[in-house]
Image 1: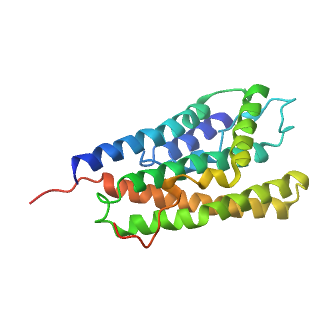
Image 2: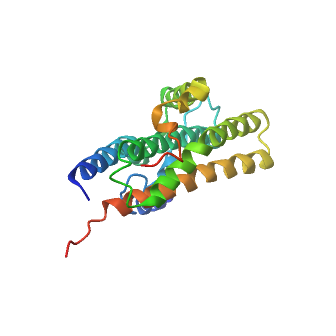
Image 3: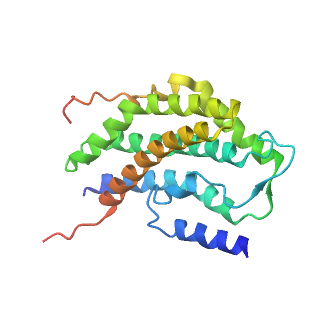
Length: 146
Length: 69
């Protein structure tokens, strides 16, 4: 029953608009699967999910800034996209450095405070992904020519 | 929207799906995340970290925000 609930909730995440990162929720989870004993995470599912979230966030943000960079002229009618991509460019290095530092802090001391801090920085990455998703969906919306 | 932008968007969407589809597939896998899968996740994470600032040195990361389009 628990597994069914888990799959249903996962599906609800997945069937959100399947835009570039419309399934942002997916990036930070490997579903309801548990960790096999003897792995590098030593049973710490949160640590595994946070590492997965960080690498996936990087991949998706990289895709977004690359897309914006390669299509600046075509996207100029949406100045908010340039602003958003520039903001991601300006801050990503710091965001990921913070994520790595807070990851290390949590790995060294799995306190609730360290977990909360890591959650916060992953939330920042997720917000950036949500914004990227919104703008890509906006461009993908066809317009009706008069 | 010009056709080139539509094609570029489609390419970007496909690139994004390349990342997302395996994650979605993972949701439907049953059982445990194997030791090998855990190692793969860790390796990818460490690979990103090992790049350091180099992960942000491509031209796509270094656009002058004040440069007119």
